[in-house]
Length: 92
Image (cartoon, rainbow, N blue to C red; front, side, top):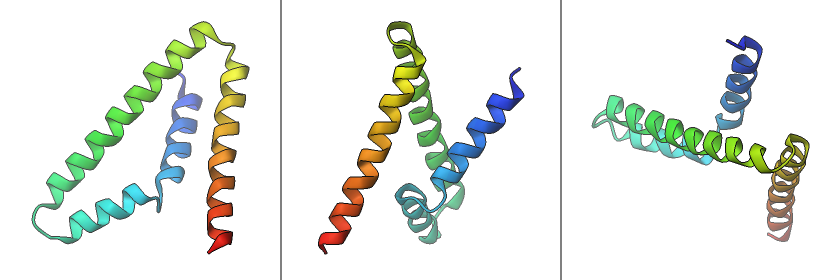
């Protein structure tokens, strides 16, 4: 098993998810107090399914594109979204 890849992936996703809209929505659902374990299971399953989709897409893309291109494309999209959010908030 590639422990370095496992830890890097865990740390990256964990830090990226802290305080994002998904986590805040989960806090809201859990605050209802009706069934926190069901909220946990629903949120965990959603993260697992979205991660599975990302792995499937990434695996498929690496068969048709060089990994370097995929990394550059992902980075450009990430930076682009960040710039759009900055521009949107500067206008307010």
